Structure formats: C-alpha cells, structure tokens
Amino acid sequence: MTERSAPHRTPVPEPADSGPAGSGPAGSEQTVPQQTVPAPAGRPRVHYAWVVAGVSLLVLLGSAGFRSTPSLMMDALHNEFGWSLGTISAATSVNLTLYGLTAPFAAALMDRFGVRLVVVCALLTISVGSGLTMLMREPWQLVLCWGVLVGLGSGSMAGAFATTITGRWFQARQGLVTGVLTAAGAAGNLVFLPVGAWLVEQHGWRSAVVVVSLAASAVAVPVLLLMRERPADIGLLPYGATEERPTTPAITDGRALARSLRVLREAARTRAFWLLAGSFAICGATTAGLVGTHFIPAAHDHGMPVTTAASLLALIGLFDVVGTIFSGWLTDRVDSRVLLTTYYGLRGLSLLLLPQLLAGSLQPPILAFVVFYGLDWVATVPPTVALCRRHFGEDAPIVFGWVLASHQIGAAVVAGLAGLARDALGNYDLTWYGAGALCAVAVGLCLALRGGRPGGAGVAVKAVGAEA
Image (cartoon, rainbow, N blue to C red; front, side, top):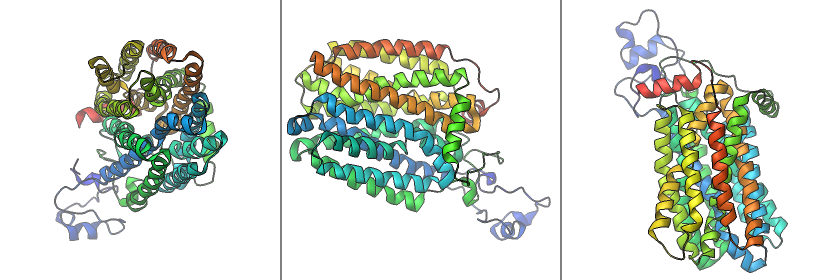
C-alpha cells in the first residue's frame, strides 16, 4: 500500500540530463519547473489512490445500508397502514429498477461533471427521499420517496462508481480493490440491519428513516473534502503504473446521455454483453430481489423474531465481505468464467435447500446456510467487472453500468413477484425453488462466454495484479 517508486508520483518524462540535480527536493524543482505538484523526495508514502478508495468505501457502506432499510419496515408498514406485502414490495421494485437504470448514466455523468459532484448530489437525494418518508400516508408516496428518490440516489453510487474509481486510480490490484469496494455493500448491512431492526422494534420505523437521512448527509462531507477525480490532477500515476496510459477524454460538451446510449448500442451488438447481462440479472434476482428483500419476512413466517432474522441477514453480509474480497483476489489470478460458473452453481444449491432450513429459532442448518450463501452473495461482481474490461476496454464502466441495470431489473422483478407469491400462497417456498433453477440458467450463460480482447484491459490487469 505504499508508493514505491518515483513514477507513481511524476507523470512527466524524466529529462535527458538526470544527474544529481534530480536526486533531491531542490534539484527536482529545478529540473521540472512546470510540474503542478513537485515530486516529493525522501521516503515512500501512502499513494493517494488508497485515500480515494477509502472515501469510496465509506460512500458504498452508507449506500448499502440505506438500500437495506425497506426490508426492515415491511411488517411495520403493513401493521400501521394495512398495505399488503405486494404493495410494499412494489416500492422496493421501483427502487431496485431505478438503482440499476441510473448506474450507466451516472458513469457518464461522472465523466462530464466529476465524481465528487455526482456522489454528493446522490447522497443528498437519498437524504431528502428518506426524510420525506416520515410524512407519507398513501402507497404512492412510499413509491415516490423510497422507490424513486432513494432509488435514483443509490443508483448513482452503484457498481459503475466502484468501476470508475478502480479504473482511474489503480492499475495493480484492480481485482482486489473492486472486491473490497463491492464488499462494502455487505459491510453496510452489518451496521444498518441490526441497528435498523432495533430502531424499528423499539422506536418505530420512522426512527430508522431519520437515521438514514442524517447518515446520507454526513457521508457527503468526506466526499467534498477528500475525493479527487484522477491521479493526474495531483501529479500522480495510477497505483502500480510505471508509465502514463491512454485514457478516454472526459466529456465536456454535455453529451453524457448520448454517450451512455451509444455505448449501450455498440455493446448490445455483441454476444458477450447479453450473456453478461443475462447472468447478472439472475444474480440480482437471487440476491437483492429475493433474499435481500424477503428473507426477513420469510424467516418471520416461521416464527423467527425480526431482530434475529435481521441479524442473520447482517451475518450473511459479514461472510459476503470475506467472500467478495477473496473473489477479487482470485479474479486477478483465475479465469473469471470459471469463477462465475462456480459461484452460480453453489448459490443455486443453497437456495434449493433453504425452505427446509428455516425455523423459529437459530439452528445449525440455517447458520450453515448463512455462511455458505454469504460467501457467495456478491462474489460475482469482481469477475463480472473483469469480463467487462476484457471485452469492452475503456467503455467498461458504462457497459458494467448497463450490466448492473440488468442485475437490478432482475432483482426488481423477483422482489415484486415474491411479494405477490407470498400473498397468494401464504409462504415463499416456490420462490426459493424458482431461484435455484434460475442459477442453473446462469451457469449455462457463463459457460457460453468466449473470447475477449487479447492483451486488453482485463488481461493487463491480471498480469500486473499477479506481479504485485
């Protein structure tokens, strides 16, 4: 994690005469008088890429916690307003859909207006949407506040944000950093789910949405103070780089929307895009759409207290942190197609077994599910990002934004259907079995992936990551 050589700090070529004058602080300033940030001499220090990654981690921690709150409020809203679980799930479906559809446009807007401005606006949108929820009296108001506003805000900090940060700031360790940032979603649940469940149970659901609103505003502060756009802005190369690499020029003519649609149009002509989008739609359906939204009410159906169920979901998040970081490490070393095939196969097996494991109290079988399923929760993200880089190069952040949109559409569809199935059948058994079958389809889609750009972004990252 240290800056190990001068090229990390100095993006300009060395002068032809690099004698003693270039070896100390004074000599460096005389040799490169036009450098915006003089190259510091002396001992290695932490590369600023890690500071940016830390701020990004905090943003994603909060964003994940904000998204998890509706699952805690389902029974409380049902009891207070008499709304069916299908009606409440509709707001969650809108949230998940907009979360996904916003991501590709957010990636282009970050190129146009900067990461810092887009993220701060997104956090404030979440704060407003969550705060207004306290005043609602009708279902459409829940859809507007939590579905539309929180969905748009959290979507602006979705996977495209992490992909943009890792693509700009890291050349070595891209897979690992992508895994860590992805795991932030699970870590956010570790904090918000138990606390939110306690707040809902002890002080009502309104206390939980107040905490979300205040937390979203608080997270915006370190973004304003510490976030930087690109390494070159402060006279650095990306972490692990030894020479400048060509980058796509930032869009400055207001055509961020046009670029997002153009990238989608070009990517949609490829077989790889549809295979990635299809498998990732199933990923969303079997995680955020089903387990993330309905695990707590499903466990409650079996007599488990809401706080216990929320703690189990948070525990899934704990093991997800481990699994996703390890998946990022593996992505730098193992064929991403092999990883995805393994992940989806194991996930499907665990979901097929879940209906027999749920009980009114903590039992070893449900704890085993939590560990096994948690390790797999979003371990799919690092290899999916790597495959986007391999097939689509510099457009990978926007392409992954569209792939993530399919993830959230899959999640939204299943979140709504699972709520309707529960209202109609009185239990969730059919949805668990259906999710297991979908995972088998995802395995087939991943096996069908072929090729990529020889020597492209994904291959380069793999080589550098392995060396580092």
